[in-house]
Length: 440
Ligand SMILES: C[S@@+](CC[C@H](N)C(=O)[O-])C[C@H]1O[C@@H](n2cnc3c(N)ncnc32)[C@H](O)[C@@H]1O
Image (cartoon, rainbow, N blue to C red; front, side, top):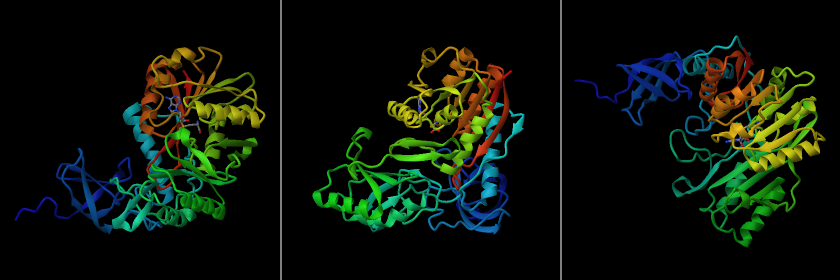
């Protein structure tokens, strides 16, 4: 009898993982992406029919495991979509990320750096100082749950702890769960935003209906007991306000090498891994090869994470950022760190024509740290105007970095000198990277 399409089969996975960390199995002219399978493993899996343009499968049994397979320490691994690679040894994870960067550069960018950098790695656990877990009332799962999305679904995993969240935040999850479950609007709280600063933990509670007086008292008591700054958000970002303490101490993180304190609000963009961020900032600054008279333009500068260390090192620098509130924070950070020479301005760097409003000359070096969509307009239209001698590009998406690298190298004649992966998000498949381009 012919085998039904969804009968389990034994097969060997390819020697590479998919870009999102799944095992790749070729079977009967089809390519299956199977969660939980690593490279070069012999497995039994159930092949599924094509869905959303992809063949997937379910791992049933590991027959012969890869040498770099480890036991995932988190009890939620496999269900929670927060991590994809806990079953792979950390050294192999960063190898996978370096390989992903390499493949993107070759396939999309048709470029190869003169030197591949040793990847940056640091804290592996409890590194995440910023996150936005979902909250939902799910009677079938026992009531209010807090957590990240499950893998390949819109359901939330109910987390009582998390090994990647900052430990102080992870430890709060059970008490937070009780707090929300006891609230009068237990089914009207969709999300919290948490931030672990160097001086305090803060959380913003988004709520769709008003809390009553008892709820507000309970939240104040929670904030006091756990020494948390608790903010409420009844509407859009502008409605965020402190609940307790009423006038919280400003949150900050330090960049100790530069003797800097950067203040931020709990809803601001923040590089999530503090230790890796310190290394990344130092590396970017080293690669800018600063010398007397250099002027650096820092695009997508956020609250001044690179701009201020550059200014502290004596460079003349202008940071440009799209969010006005972050520009204000960057200016404030320049002031409290006594760096009036650091300048900032606000511009939408993805908007057609934005290149005409940026300085046409006067900056010989460029630092770019765009969002996942990359910096297409900047490399296409602005780089030929400014013609910087050196460009350091920090990226959270190797595909858009590779696309932009192709423009810089093949269209504008830059040389890709070096590139490397950065493990900003251990145990996830996200790839942070850095690349250095010199004018040819
Ligand atoms: C990856 S973050 C980097 C921020 C900063 N360099 C840091 O290290 O903290 C990207 C930044 O680009 C900003 N951004 C996103 N879209 C933008 C746009 N269209 N124009 C200008 N800035 C934008 C975001 O607000 C964010 O601050």
